[in-house]
Image 1 (tube, protein in one colour):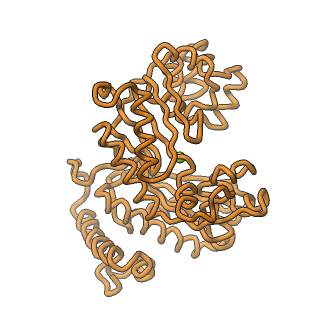
Image 2: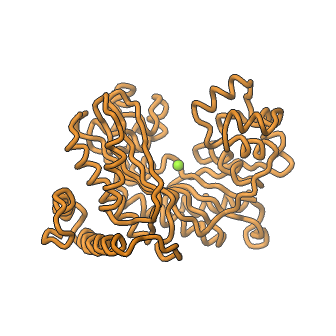
Image 3: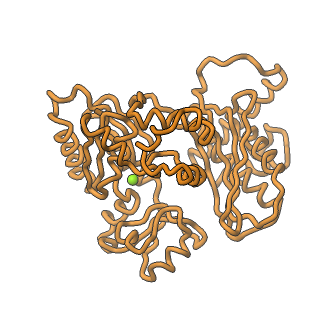
Length: 396
Ligand SMILES: [Mg+2]
């Protein structure tokens, strides 16, 4: 059996816990500016139709007495760390998937902690006793079903799907609940009259892959209750990204370029801190009408320097023909690998030397940022990069 735990309105619940004036009030945690989006909404705010990723001005329109609380990532991370520690007391097999979500393999724990239901209650109780936060848990014999189950009775929920219930559950599961089904796929589902995951199994693999690509194969497996995914403890985050909502919508190439530089720096720093390299860079632009596009590129070699990430991101940006004003700029990296894992030697000695130089710049910048905060070094390093000075220039 696999257990999936998801904290309830995590950021908002922490703020309500720490400030009694916010208890039972509609609050959102978000950035400071009115142009930010909702990061987490309290359950009181959700009653007004407010949800995460909604622009703050829209949330305010929905509820005039909404309280906006600026986020405090450090505090949330410290709470997250404690939750993961509690989980690791129960099982050595914990896979953290986000700041407030994890899978736990609970096989073989019966003698120590009792039935799956007893384990779930114990975990919820421990977290509440230590942190005064509620969580929702799903338990199922199949990994993806445990995640669906944890979402079924929020907040403070516990849903268990036993082996004998799996088949009926899959047949009744609304197809939009299956992770990874987007709007386009939903249109195709409607055409094929697929309403539940069980309906998928009525169609042959050939048709499913024609309509849904690679996902068709996975959907067919899931519809038959086949999902061999395990709880993976040595989980490496699949992507790192950083984005900024601009202070106003702009059409200005230079300013967007500066923002890309700034975000590349932040992504590079996070990447290096985790000792990772990436093989894929992407950018994301959101426009004044809230439509958005992403562009990504697979690289021929792994990188981790801010300069290299910036160069790739800028090249991607240059391929986009701008028709609308830009509201948000994001830079990210995927296909992450452990930096010390063996790699093929594919770089020319020259490139290798340049890469080493940039890496040494980064390590200086990173250690200064670590000591004095990222804002102090940001401007200096932006100048260094944008003026293409000697990487060993004084600013670094
Ligand atoms: Mg959550």
